[in-house]
Length: 376
Image (cartoon, rainbow, N blue to C red; front, side, top):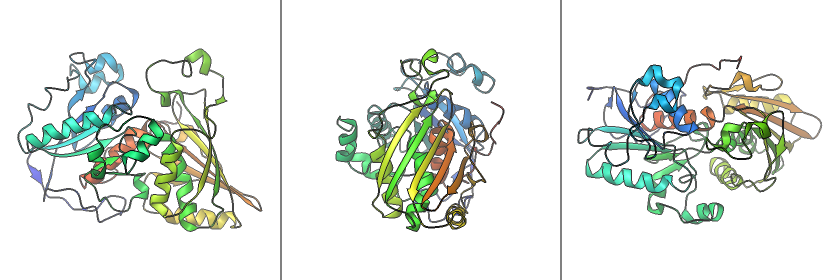
């Protein structure tokens, strides 16, 4: 292992008070694993880890692809991972020294991730590993098993671990109080970025109406009718209007961030593009647009990845980056907030790395500063 070096406890965003990193010094290199590493989110985690100054991949875990090369599954990563292969669940921990630091991301599916994380934490405890986990599935986004099971209709895979996880958009969590984190979903991230400052300021009606359009990568890597290219190309349609399963997550996380009750009327749409989410929020407000803009600028003053822009945000300005753009509009009675993010980065892998940076008391921007390529 690389020798540890002294560090400070502050994050790059200016938020302090994170209390869960246990070592007095932080390793210069933190061994890092990705569970469920063969999907789109897993691939983005591998890409971002390759450019991270502190996280160093030791295992891309996949039972179905164990022994095959990362490059065979993700040809665009061949230049950084060479002949490195996916590892099976049962053997990748063995090379780590007892007492080592370990960062673990789970990109496993909803319903499967919790049990995988529980097994990992049990094995890590037996080897006295100092581990932080960030889960990108829905399994650790709810504070109790009943809330999770009401939405997903199945038993939770590791209910005794729920209290060890904290969830929320990183920009809405001033203090890390748990050892592990559950990163919100991509739609949830975009809606919460647009809604929470208004709720926190208390300057609107409590009824929010949101339309969101997502790219096809949001449906995962396995082909299905809704993401098959001939169906998606040059097409636009709503799905699960007012009944999307992420709505309860959005409501709960916004209340946790603001203490306010509200109602969400959410209509998601499938868009004819691969990456990105664009949400448009409408709510009644008497405040002028200048005052609303100041609310957002003040709220996100210490948030390095949230940009308040003139006019409408544009997907091409954020896709493949960890940035979010927010724009506002107003007439006499109605406020409009628009938010654009990349669903795979800010809405998944990038947000997860923000969480891991904070859990280890690294600069929150570490490994995430690359700008959007724009002409995608």
